[in-house]
Each structure stands twice: as structure tokens, then as C-alpha cells.
Image (cartoon, rainbow, N blue to C red; front, side, top):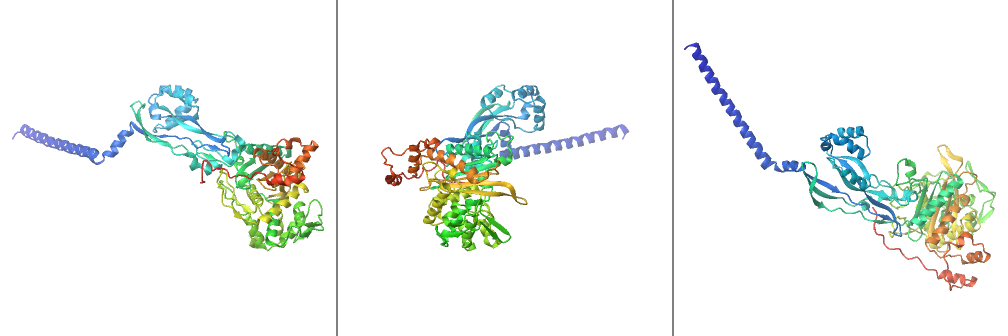
Length: 614
């Protein structure tokens, strides 16, 4: 065979071989495509259906309003107002970069800043531009019809009382979730449940159809025990006292004796929950619930109650406090400002004798004294449910040193919160029954008897003498019997007690014959020469209780002093705030008791709108 023939034969053979390989490859491709199609359409169809729908079908949340918080009289103290948020789909907007400057101008951003943010989110389909703005402003932006730009409805929390109720309510974050205070404690109750809707969009990203999947459930309303009128009055008077005494801070708690409801709770310094920018974290702390102070002489009524309960003294037992000082190991305690001589147990309260309290508590076994004080709530959390509430520090007898029990008897060596003091004094005013405090109207916690009713009544009567004869005359309220106790405690520092720095306290109940309010005032580090509780804190008690008794229509229980003041023309401001007795009431001396016996008794308040706690 010639050379040319052999080449033609080889070429013919190679062509046929190549055709076979091509046919095989095409066949394999066909089988693969058919198999893939079967897999997509039959085996994994749900996945690809979802992927396809994701290109034009979206499920969007429907925001719901947070429940309203009202005071005990139904006045709103925290409400959610509708706002709008502008968002953008970066992928869509970046396809039309010529609209970016227009959008930047509409949302008050620089072009460079917006372009930078879009480039960082170029692979995302959602990015917020502006949060919680006026809905009218949002409408104007959406009306520009810039690709990928849309608005969604949201809610913003507003607090009408501002700084006055900041520590009680707390605040919410930008997503309307509770962060502190009762907003945090009742967050689940208040926030409700968001709804959902499915929207269909065209290739331009415009919504052409929507279906409701789940309706939004608004948050539940919450009715507090707080009275916003008393709250603001307490805030104003506490602020005035801090300014007048150049004090670093202060707290005030007012409780309803019969129910344990907190009617007011104020702390200074404070902050504006409507504008958190610039507010120091330290100002957000509810000091009345979280911060500890040594109670000073406000402890003495509990010491005397413990001794009376144990039967080691009576109200008339004589206590020799001579010569006005007493050695306790390497320490010496003394009565200020003078030697009180021989006192009755009542006189120990009236004269606020440290030596008298130490001698009374010496008659008590250690464990008996500890158990009695612990029953009044010291050393355990009050149980109000407020976030971060402290249980204070009440050392157990096993850890006491020589003078520990003596110093504790007059308020040193243990630490409590203002809320704990108010709760203990409310128990004295409530016939010895302690009711854990609550911030929810109508939610009355179970009471427990911590001291006999007769003994509680005796101690309240002893505390009346502090106001009529002792160092708390400035706490008196015309027309009412007031029972209370002053306290002045040195402030502790890293190296011990700090010279010249004190906490001034006053705690009391009013009206003393049938207590309605238990109130505690703590002034932190007053300056300017006055630092005693009777001079600094007692006047705040007077000013606030004078208004609160009027606001709550509490009838007077000291008719004689009221009539005497009216007859002498020396009623001043106080007479103008007293409830007027019945016109047909006969009020000479022989009929005053009959009028007092006829005074109406408080009725249980209705159940709150929001029952239960978290």
C-alpha cells in the first residue's frame, strides 16, 4: 500500500474514534442533566422552591406596641408612641449609584459615609439608615422611590414624669426591650408579641401583594402602686433638701402601711430616661433598693421591740445611762450631746441614747436579738421583685466580736437599704405584721407577724415622743400624730469611718394612731454645718407627708392641735392642706375621741390591670 493510502486509512480511523468519544460525552451529559432535573424536581424540590420564593417572597415582622404603665390612679407614666425606621437593601441601591447622593441628603448623611456603609454591606439585603424618626419624615424619604429604600413602623418609649420617676421605671433600648427598673422586671408582660406578614415583590423590589400570617399581640398594661403626685412631691422636696444642705445625694421611700404598696420612691442624683445620652451609669442606679447604709439610730426602735418581745424590759423599765459614756473593750461609746442620766425604756427612744440601747440589748441573748432583727427583714431581700434589690448585711452571732451586739443596737455594724427600713417601720405601724413591698397596685403579698401587736403599738407610741419631745420636732405635721426616729450615721470608707461625713436619716409613720404611711428619708453627706437627721431629713418628711396626707384624703387624728392652731391664727401653710372634718362634728375635748373613732377605715384598692409579677 502506498504512503498516501495509509494516511487516508489512519485519518478515517481517527475520525470515527473521535465521533464515538463525542457521542459518549454527549450521552453522559444528557444522563447527568436528566438526573439533575429529577433530583431538583422530585427529590429536593422544597429547597429550590424556597430559594426561588426568597427572590420575591419575604416574611416581614409586624412590630407591636409595648404595654402602657400607669400610676395607681390610671395616669400614664410610660407610653409607647409610633415612630418609623428607614432601611435599605444595599444590593438593590448599589445597582443605581446615581441615587445615592439623593438618599444621603434625605437622611442627613454625607455621601461618603453612606457609600462606605453600603460597600461594607454590599452582600446584604438589609441595613438600617435611620431609627425611630417621625413617621412624616420617613414618608418623605420613601416618596422619593429610591430603589431598595423602605420604612417600617416601630415604637419609642416616652416617660412623662422624666427624672422624677426614672429609677422606678427604668428605660428600654432602641428595640423597645426593658433594660432597668420595672421596665426590665415586667419586660415579658409589657412587650407583647410581634406579628408577621408575607409580602411578594416584583423584580424592582416593590411590594405587590401581602398576606397576614400572624397578627401582632400588643403588650399588656401595668398599673403601679406609685402615686405620681406623691412621687413628684417627694422628688421636689428631696431635691430642695440636697441643694439647701449641699448634699451628695439622697433617697426617699413611702409605703402604704396596710398593703405594703410603694407609693413613692425617689433617688438623687437622677437622669432623664427620655434622653439617655450623657447620663452617667452611676446616676441610673436605684439607690433606695440597691445601696446600703448603716441605719444609725433608726435601729433603736427595732432593738427596743426585740427586748419588749423577749420580756426582758417593759416601757417603764429604768436604764441608767450615767455618766454619759461607756467602755466596750477598747472602744468607748457616748451619748450626744449630753449625759441623759436615768431613763425609762421610752426615754431611751426619746433621747436617742446609745448607752441605753446598748444596755437594753445586753439583756438579750445573741441569737434572740439576731432572730428578731432578721424577722423585720434585715439581712434578707425585701421581696419586691425589683431588679438588683439588696438584702443588706446582718452578721450572724458566730461572727460577732465583743462590742458587735452593742453597736448593732444603735445602728452600726449592719447595713440596710432605705426600702428595708421603710418595710420594717411599716411593720411596726401595721400591728407588728410585715408585708413584703410591692410596686403593683392591688398585689398584696402575704403578711407575717414579726412582733406582737401590743408591742408594736407601744414602740410607735415611744416614737411619738421623738417628734413631740425629742430631736425630730421638725417632722411634726399639724393635725396629725407623727411617730418617728432620727438617725445620724458616719460614712464608712476604705480605712474606716470618714471624719466629717455622715448619712442623715429619718424614718416614721403617720398618722400614729392609725398609720397610713411609712416613710424613710436618707440624705447622703450633707455639708454646711448641719448633718443630724432631725435637722436635715425630718423637714423633708414634714413637707412630703403634709402634702401626701392631703392628696390621699387621710383624716386628721390630732384634732386638738389643729383647733388650737386655728383659734390662735397660727395655722400657716399646714392648715390649708388638712382635710376638713365633717361640718356637724362636735369637736370639744370630750368629743374629740368620738370623732376619731368615727373616722373611715381604708378599703382595699381594686385589683390592678396587670396581675402578677415576673
